[in-house]
Length: 235
Image (cartoon, rainbow, N blue to C red):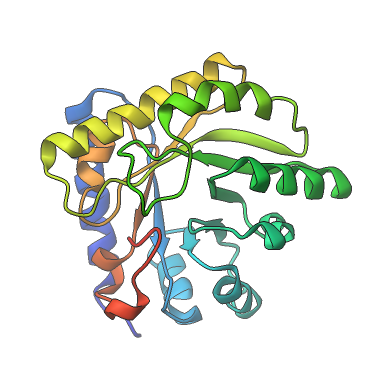
């Protein structure tokens, strides 16, 4: 077993999630997504064995070989940036968390139309306005929400955001509140938009307090990664 303490770590994170739900008062169900980027297929199998059935990957080229190697029926999430020329890969995932541009939306829509089944996506919102992050600003979202209604090849299931890595508690609350408000914009435009994917190993409890329905946790479950392995969507 590569991660002998995984079951205990999962139990601790789930306990902290439950406590954060109680503090936040949103009464939401929260899906724990185990982020297995840079780890092999064994990490996915052990996550399944520990009761975590949702797995997040950052890169299509790393995820696809793992999918081929894992027989457990895990639900695969793409949490990192998806290049427009790889839009076809969206159909390999139960949910793409990183719909971050109009051009990508159009490409995923075209693929969904071609196969006769829409892809489920989350709109990435750059609440904090970081130059290094992808996604729409909150001020751009209302117009884009209306446009996305016309794209039948995708279904907008909610919002994903990331807080600045060095954010203090006040900024974390503001960022996650902003994402919740962005989800309200999508709902008002007629999208199902039930999901709110936010919170990683260093800030998931505050995210849950603010209403997160999905948290993306890797380091707390599997241990640290090398600096070279860190990147967009790092958990």
